[in-house]
Structures are given as structure tokens and as C-alpha cells.
Length: 445
Image 1 (cartoon, rainbow, N blue to C red):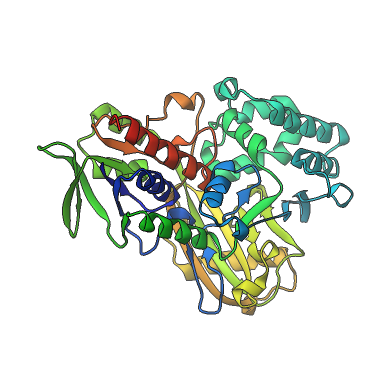
Image 2: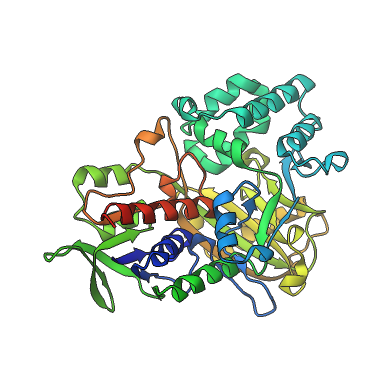
């Protein structure tokens, strides 16, 4: 087959990898100047490693991406650590996901989490026990389908009590989904508890280095990756197949795999049936805004990820000190901090300048370290993406479009379809593999 793939993110690259292994001809059209999509990185002149535009890591349970790294012969560049993930509560930072020294040799994340929950003294002991038991129950639950019939808000409030829910999980849902937090179903939350681990992974050179390795293999297997080439339209050809139009011209393909947002798909393919287009419009998502700071000094005492409940008054949702996970020596000695938030795509943060966001964000850093001064900031970068976190309501499995669209030969593979799993490169690999299988099997190849 002659296949076009729209988007050189991890899903698109994985699909291309699978198709070219089978001898199919593949052209990838990518609007950006590099592969990687939302997981792509950038590199300051002082750094040896690239850094992701939006914070990324892998979990020890991410079998699909780990398996792909093995296939690429790059397992020696994958490493895992136990960074400290924490919760800010009433002026104090409490570790949540980090190895308990006495249990460091025990490889069970839920054991460490249960101990950390019991150590969270702001909650009465009975509440801590209920939180720990609820979390443990979710790790033992195999079938998620009944859980999608109830909201996470209702299930967790009932399971752990209103007091514990208000302190422990409700702020995280609000921070992630804003006004939609009461709509999110419990299957989505189950997926986080069931699959995520406290042990986190990273790639030597950053995620961009992983994506470059994958792109190089895809090219070596015969694919043509056209960077800086935005797709303008996808249309059915009178002669059969599909036409992909870009500023450089148009070309005909037997199959097209689009790995784009639902909004972009609807704009690229206006000929999609009206009912299908309406379904795309109903797929809600949150955007992401991230301000990255290169500091001259360490900000926190070893905390990698700090969840910041909205009620605590911070101007952002989470603070991620990347160099408390990966050594600052790889970044010219810079201490790298992400200040990030999930927001409605019409939020003012998507229109404010970098200087305006710096003025809002920097004063909050003194709450993590009273010695912080603005002159600690050597450099900063601002990244925004309006399609970053799908919102899964009750019975969301009925809303997910099939990988095959109503237009023959056109497939769609996006993070809106990896449900109940959360978006991430592991599930981008999975859906890339699946859409490649579908594209091949449905031709009779």
C-alpha cells in the first residue's frame, strides 16, 4: 500500500514503523520542524540533553513503549528511578509517591502509597484508612466497564467520605478538569490507580532523543518524513483512494491515517458525514499551559512533582522540578522547573504574553523556597496546547469513534481514543500499532 500519515507524533511514527516493517510505502506529513508531537523537546545551547515542552515520564507498567524501545535496540538508554511526588496542603509539602526507606526493596507501588497515605496526618486515621483501602481496591479491580457508569466525584465521595475526598482527590480532579470535574467518570480514575507506578522512567537524551531514534528507524525502513509540511485538506479521489493536499502540492494515497485532534480532523475533512462531525465536536478536552524556568539554584528539597490544589491559591496546577528526577549536569547545571496548568481552551492564559505569565507565576515560587528571588531565573520558555487532556464523561466508551472513519481508507488515531487510559506516549504507541494493523487487515493484505 501507499499510506499517508498526518502527524509525526509517537502514534504516527509507531504506525509508520509497523507499516514499513511490512513493506508498505509511507509518507508522514508533519507541520512542526521535528518529530514527537506533544512529547517533542527543545534544547538550550548550554544543555547536552533536550527537554520536553510538556513534562513527561514513563511508568514501569508502560509495556507498549518499553517493548518498542527494546525492538529499536535502545533499552540501554532507558532508566527508572523513584522520584518524590508530593501534595501541597496548608503551607506544607507531603510526599505521596516516593520509596519509604524501610520498604525500598519492595517493588509494589501500592505498598509505598498505602504507607504514605497513613503518614498524611492532616486527615484523621479513619479517613486515611479509607483512602488507602479504596486505592488498594482499585488496583485489584480488573473490569473497568461498571465504573464508567458513575462519576469519579460520586464514587470517591462515597468510598472515602466527603472529608477525605475534599482533601485528597477532589482538588486533583478540579485541577485537571476544571468545571468538568463532576462529569469525569470513575473508569478514567481507575485507570490511573490501576496502571500507574511510583517508579518512573526516562530516556537518555530526553524524549526527543527517543523520538529521533524511532524516526531514524522509520526512515531506514523506507518512510519519507516531511517536516514543516502542514496538511491543508484530505479528500476522496475520483480515481479511488484519498488525496492529501499541502502547500507543496497534492498526492494520492490508498490509505490515510490522521493522528490529529478532533477539531483539526473536522477542518481537514469537512466531507465527513454530519453525524460523525457532530460526534467530534462533542469530544471535550482541556488545554495545557506550561512555563519552564531555568533556575540557577535548586528550588525544592528533592520534590519532583508537587500537586497544587486550586484552593491553595497558586496561579498554576502543578510544579515539576525536572532536575530532582534527572541530574542538572545534563542541562549545563540549570535547575529546570515546570509551572503547568490544565485549562479551558478559552482561558486568558492562552492569550497572555510570556512576560505577563512570569509576573503572575514567579511570586508563588517563594512559597516553596522563601529564599527564592526573581534573579534566580536564567531563562524561561512558554508552551501552550489547546488539545492536551480529553474529558471522559459517564459512559464515555459509547462516544469514542472507531479508528476507521466513515470515509473509506481514512483512519483516525488520537489520544481521545485511548480511553479509559490517560493520554501518554505508551498509549500513543498502542494506538499507533492498532491503527497500522487495521489499515493493513482491512485491505486484505
